[in-house]
Image (cartoon, rainbow, N blue to C red; front, side, top):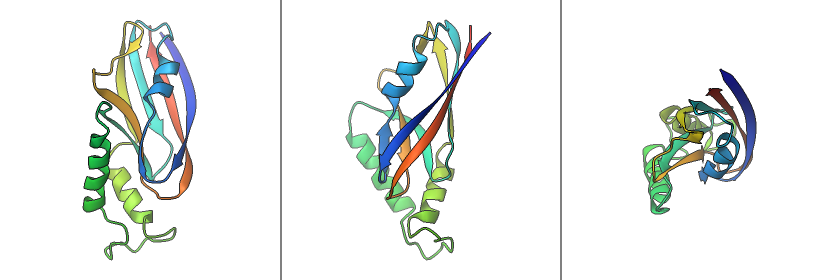
Length: 139
């Protein structure tokens, strides 16, 4: 059994979904694992990871519109506003999505579906640098 790990950094310029598929595949494909598991983990509480469609960019626009309706900034429900009106909504958005993903590796390739991409979902409006840890295990 072999194991590999890597950290990637994503410079986020405000709230939106960032396609990190190319960075992940550039590292993971070609590790020499015929079968295994790739795990991604984001080290933040106001950003998350998603697998979603990467063909039609309208999907990303609609996802953000949905989350804006579901968890609006400045909602009077929230008392945690230490870093602004988007602070607590960012934590809620992160809790509703995922901080880690697991994707099979098959025949030395990450086994994403035809229209699937890996996205880092930034939930804050400010510019942030986010860290995603990658771990692959297999043979």
